[in-house]
Image (cartoon, rainbow, N blue to C red; front, side):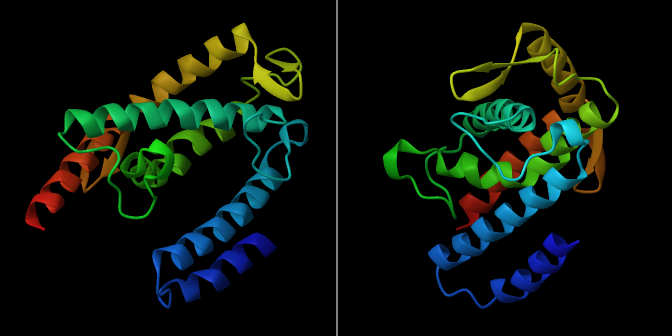
Length: 189
């Protein structure tokens, strides 16, 4: 796949970045390429060409948007519960009241939690593009039944086991562990 080749090429330049802005530029390019590649591996009825939000323009982007929002809120709660300040991050800026630390920490979890959940839902025909979505205005959104199905799948996923830091725990526990590790690192600075 061309996207993987391009991502690998850009990855070679990351260590040469001299500013956070330059590093974030690489992240933006890789993100665009990642979503182009992701759009090519989903079933045809869910295929998309780019990430779209506010409003999501297609069914897969509608699920990604809802999933990322739920994950963002889960991480925000864990960050606050761990005693961290959600506005002070390392990569993302706090301009406009943005929760920069939460945006920094979510990056690790998008693909293994939300993206893999979405692929599972569409590849196993657990969600139907015609029955579980509705178009409203310019956007596409999950309807009531689609949201129920999605929320049930999300709750199962967040409670499922994974190997984080060489120990088995749920994704929910791993997210909390990540926040606690960040707190330990902050206290050492």
